[in-house]
Amino acid sequence: MSFKSFLKAEQEFYELKCRAAEYYRANRVPQTLEGLLNQLFEEKPGDVYGYMANYFSRLAHAPVISSIVGWEVYDSRGEVALQADVYCVVRNEEKLVCSAVITGADDDGVESRDAVADHQQASVATALEWIREQLSAMLCGFNPAHQTQLDKVLSDFVMARYLEEQDAHSRERKSEEEEKRSESAPEAMPPFPPSQSKDKKGGEKGKKQNSVDKLVPPPELPVPELPGAMVVAAVSLAAAKSAASLSAVPLYKHIITLRDQALSSVFMPVPLLTVLSCGKASAGKLNLLEELILLPTRTHSPTQIIRMGHELQREIKRIASTAAGKTGPAVLGISEGGALQLGIDRPEQALDLLMEACANLGLPVGKELRLAINCAAHMLMDYPKGKYEVMVGTLKSPDELVDMYVGLVSKYPAITALIDPFRKEDVEQWLKLSSLIGQSCCLITEAAVSPCPRWREAKPLPPGVTWVTLRFHSEMTLTDLLHAVSERRDGESILAVSSEEVGDDTLVDVAVGVGVTFIKLGGLSGGGRMNKYNRLQSIEQELQEQGILGMDLSLIHTETSILNSHAQSAYHCCLKKISKMRTLQERGKQNLLLM
Image (cartoon, rainbow, N blue to C red; front, side):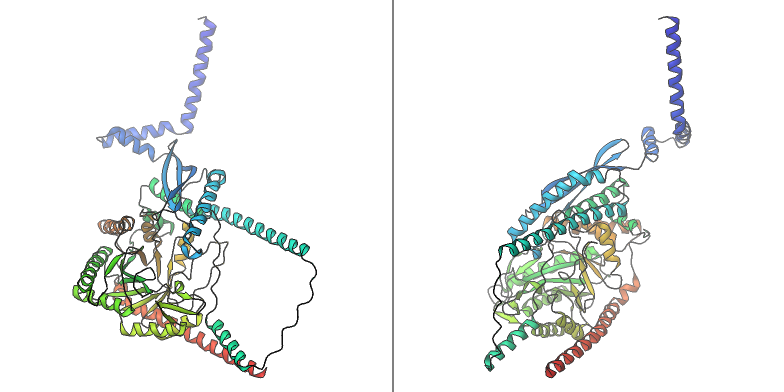
């Protein structure tokens, strides 16, 4: 090597060292290493390099989303569902952090199970396309801990797709109307309707038909779900789980921090446990009692409630097996919701059986333990006849159903909540029932309300409702659910978990985190459902060990009075509405007489 080559190499090496020194100075590497070495020498940990790894991990950049990957999976009923995987760059390495699975629409929105499967398949395919072609790139670089900003991006994206679909539908309708106008020839004016006949019988028939139409308004058409909108819930929940995992905290604690709540006291939701199912799918004649649910007070922990429900179901099986073949019902299996399914012919038969089992076990039914009935009446309406088929061959008008509920509540005072006693269209009957039993029994709506995202108008609650059941459905972000729960601070809220959910326990953490009063998981059967009950118990135990399990003593001692105060306020509100309706009806009659 010549002398000039040597000098050139030295010069290049010197410049390289200068650039390295500048780079280290700019990133404060010397000061950081000096501080680490000083702490390391002072503390002298057993695992030197583990200590150094933890030290440097605290100085690393916050993880950011690198990509979103979607998959087609299957739920507990074998229907397709959407799984969203969140990949993040963590300390310069791309890693799969967390996943979330969301099922599609409920059966109430479509006519048949085949239609559900077809809609589900199309929705999952659209969601996968959106993730692959647009959302993955849009969310790249986002910090998964920034839940509100991320959810806004998701909502804005799906709102744009919704508006595009509306524009496409409006253009199709216009083109169809134009084609009809061009194809249709000028037609003669239709003949005038015949003059009113003097036939009194015909007039009476017409009056009867009009009265039936007034008593039984037609059901509202279900709002069609935007295909692919399930991507909103899947990605939002996956991002929240990823943020919790990266922060090394449970998901429920991460969600509590999203509410800006301190972790000094965490309240557990009370599980609503279904013990009996005597609805339309059961073998008996009874259709009305879709679910008989234990409604305990907060004096019972989730563990105590689960143990109580297990003993109660075992006692019901014993009584039913003893009475089978004589006059009692036989246990026919397990419902889709995980509860015992019996062949029952009358509501009193099921309630007497439950009361007998509670008495045999010494359970304080009616005091510390109350009952809720999920009537699911919207599934029982016989529209051609305008009546509810409460039992096979037994039809009742909405007003007759009011009398039936009043009789059951007066005969069984332990019933303190009715879920969906009517269709949401039967406004007058909601008002009437609330005015009659509102002081002792709450009205809860499940199918009649669904918190809508920003691009849909929220439907009003039926009158007289004091509690609502919420679902984390496929078009909601986690921020939407937090907002829906915060709006219900004047009344109780229940988070219901559908029977078709995939068997992980994520929604239990969600229920604890968002702060609902109750969580409805179904009966004590099925691996996926029991995973959720087990997760509820483990969260309770974890909070007890940390000394942050909330226990509102004033709520325990005054829960009944709070219930009555809610009912009384709804009662007075209902009286005002009934008075207003009667005034309008009287005015309508006067106008008819004048005509």
